Amino acid sequence: MGLPKLLLCGDVVGRLKLLFKRFASVNKAAGPFDALLCVGQFFPDSPELFEEFNDYVQGRSVVPLPTYFIGDFGIGAPKTLLAASKDVVNQGFKMDGLKICENLYWLKGSGKFTLHGLSVTYLSGKKSGSGPQFGTYSQDDIDALRALVEDPGVVDIFLSYPFYCLNIILMQFHNSPCLHLCA
Image (cartoon, rainbow, N blue to C red; front, side, top):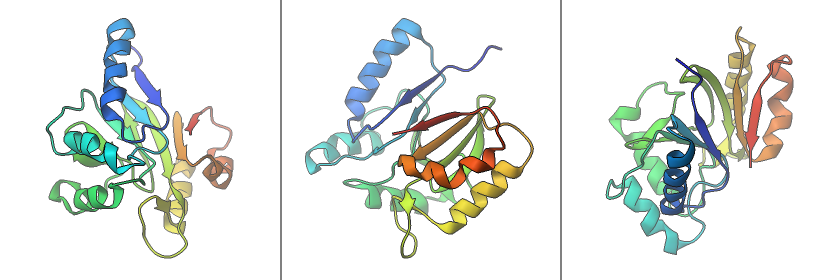
């Protein structure tokens, strides 16, 4: 089996129809791709785009490949993510993403998981000032991430959003080669 083929993208801002149209074009030319990693603001920044976004969340439109995102804020984020958090399929300790809908996964806070043989580590959001909120990470997320990267093994991909989060954790990678994706 060869290396996995992953697509990477920055701010989606709720434009899932455009994102997956571009994916279809790239997939036709250079695919097939195994997964899509989105770093940046994933949710819409205006109410007009929320209906299009919600078509995917509600299953009226199809997410064509496994898609993982950080950047959990914007119009509709709290309602969508709260519903996903309460879904029985997402209960328990899940670092490989909370399922929003078929093929769409929210990488919440911090974690490390294996995606097609690659080690993916992530830290999502801005530092939380007061209690759990969407679009933020806590000191617990930082402590958990430090413990994860201290385990033996290589971190192949590190996702963070926003970029300044990198300063908190970069020293923990012990000079292992790593692709860092940020928006």
